[in-house]
Each structure stands twice: as structure tokens, then as C-alpha cells.
Length: 112
Image (cartoon, rainbow, N blue to C red; front, side, top):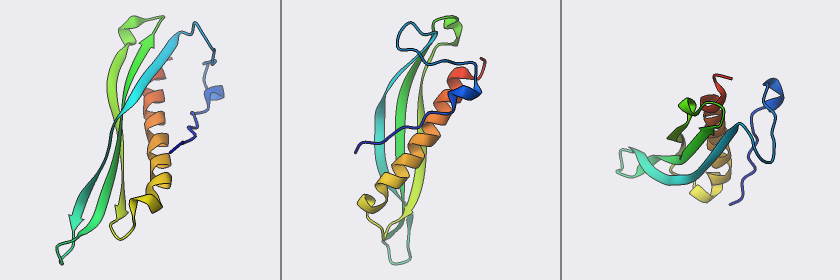
């Protein structure tokens, strides 16, 4: 499922996006995409499901390698078990990606 990622507004920072030779580099991959029963109703069936997205990120600061890191970022969203994952997945994944991108951006450039 293709998802368009909207980056935080770089124009509100001193950062400038370049094709090569940048001071900061990010690389990563999705390491987890899971759904769990979060709540059970009185009839014994799931009433609430949690969707979790986890991304592992490697950040390199070519100016100050003391700030380099590799770590995981996760986001979760709950949905009613009466809904199918197919019907809510696109919206929930978009929300989770926005949250994770914001967290990665803040972790990478908080000191700039």
C-alpha cells in the first residue's frame, strides 16, 4: 500500500534538503506491522484491536558523530473490532507514519 509521507516543514528550520553530501543522513526500514486484540467484550470476542507500526532508523550526523543513533520508533492506533482492517488501514497507517516521521525529525534535529 503506497503512502505519501509529508515531512515536517523544513522551512521553519535552518535545514536545507540536498541530494548528496548532506550533514545529516537517515536510513531505515519497517521492522514491525502487527495487530493485537486489545479488549475483549463480555461475549468473549474482541471488541478493540490495536494496530502497531515500528520503524528502525539509523541517523548519521556527518558534522558531529557523537549525535549518531540507531533506534526504533513506534506508533499505535486502536480501532473497533467490528471494522475490518482493510476499511481502516489506510487512514490509521497515514496517522501512524505522520507521528513516527515527527518523532524521527525531532530526535534527529532537536539540537540544531
